[in-house]
Image 1 (cartoon, helix red, strand yellow):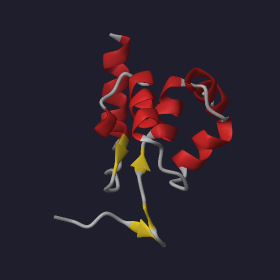
Image 2 (image 1 turned 180 degrees about the vertical axis):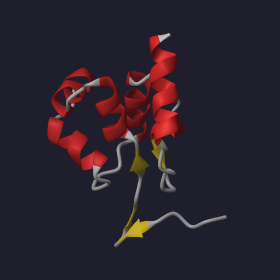
Image 3 (image 1 turned 45 degrees about the vertical axis):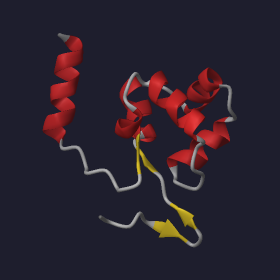
Length: 94
């Protein structure tokens, strides 16, 4: 089992928030307002500078209608190829 990445004394929590926001055309401010948090908190989470509480992570995942493990991970996410992104867009349209 791999040991989660650490920056100094904290574990890094990886996320797909920027990708999800961009895919849906949602600003940091829009997401923050929907969740009742400050827009800077969204930025801190996106950059891995702040790990959200379990409650906030679950609320963020619910906002995007995804399981929490599709949004957050202790391991870096694999890059999504162009084919995967285009397939998703085609699926969403049809």
